[in-house]
Length: 150
Ligand SMILES: Nc1ncnc2c1ncn2[C@@H]1O[C@H](COP(=O)(O)OP(=O)(O)OP(=O)(O)O)[C@@H](O)[C@H]1O
Ligand SMILES: [Mg+2]
Image 1: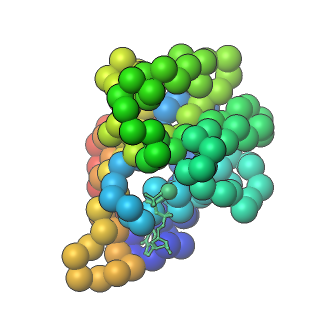
Image 2: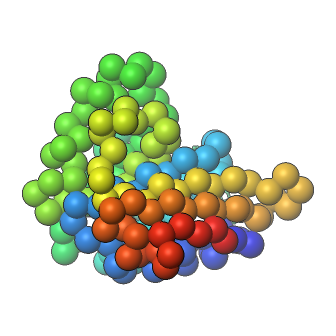
């Protein structure tokens, strides 16, 4: 992705095909573009912006055609606290979840139908990002071939 706009557009495409029960796991360092991508996904799912980062609230619940929980685990320090969150509820009952800092999730909190997205900033070009996607379960249909990068 060569710009913030391109990353947002990728998110919008995914948001348009997002359905309840899916978890989108976002990883990458501070300032990688996780919130930019999440905001694109929310916009694509028909939730009007601006979309604030949930960093200070942990979870933002958005109501569109179905519920989308936007979660940010950055401030959660202990594994125990992450495990205490109601992960099953977050993706059941017609809801889907977008999780920033998803590498802090305990393995049993991972939904079977999920996109694992890793955003890596380019070492030399400040506006470039490498985005790697690993699709699991139903999400394989969202990404041709099940795996890809751009
Ligand atoms: N190609 C790109 N894709 C996404 N963001 C980009 C890109 N190039 C530059 N940026 C900039 O990088 C920043 C990404 O910020 P963002 O809040 O989305 O990161 P984050 O991964 O959510 O960080 P944090 O871990 O602090 O929550 C923005 O300021 C954005 O303008
Ligand atoms: Mg963020």
